[in-house]
Amino acid sequence: MKLPGAVSFDALSDARLTQWMNQTLRPMKKRMDANTCAHLAFTSGRDLTMLNGELQKLAAYVGERETITAEDVEQIATHTAECTVFAMVDALVDGQAERAFSLLNVLLEGGEQRIGVLALITRQYRQMLYAKDMQESRTPQAQMAKALGVPPFALSQLTRRAGRRTMAQLKKQLAKKEKAAWDAALALRKDRQQKAEEMSQKILTELSQLDMPRVQFSCRFRETELTENGADAVAFYMSANVGEDLKPMSKVASGGELARIMLSMKNVLAEKDQVGTLIFDEVDTGVSG
Image 1 (spheres, rainbow, N blue to C red):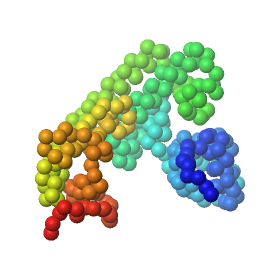
Image 2: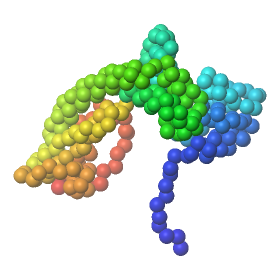
Image 3: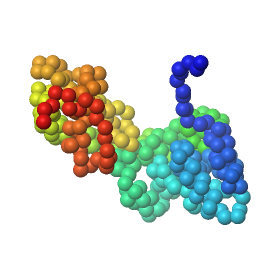
Image 4: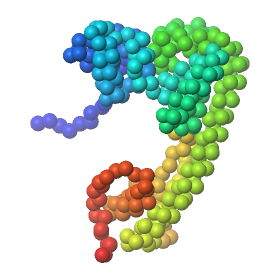
């Protein structure tokens, strides 16, 4: 008899990811060395479903050739936003403004938000600062790559960038990037708070028609570290009865209340939502007609 237990689906290590890529390529009679596998993971991300599609594409691209190279990856693989920003910062450091703006347009036309691009640029400058500090401390290359979370080829580009700036210059540039990113995050927060208030009022109107006329509902914001999604964590709070303090909806709402609140949200967000079918349990509890 098997006992119940938890199964962990941790991200694959670099070595395991390289092994998985070559196992995937074997039926197609293709292969990649470890450096090329690292290049693909850096370029297209580490999601296995995405990588499977990229490997299929690369296998078709090289034709009869058995070995897939880093140059093939650069030519045909899908670039993540982070990879594109990496190349954009390279262009900025090298004084290639036209190429940098071209890459920025690629990001924006691809649907990336301004706050996301600024956050990723800030991360690149922060990594340059760390790389500079480790260079001056004579940290071994392998240790630097592990600390920064980048493959060797990307580390060489980071250290090259860092070597062209003094520590004072990097700190000044990072401060400017952080300010721009936080300004964008605060503007986004203000917009979110306004939209959240509008959404809450519409949800309350919907709930009044679902036998929940005394419910109180609100969105509350908590500041987080700056990421490509801003610097906010948002939680739904509610009270089902007059006079009760609002508490996290996930902790106090019953199954029927959650179903009706979700139905109200879906009605309010119908124009933005592309989900075709939803199943609600107890959604009609206490509702006549």
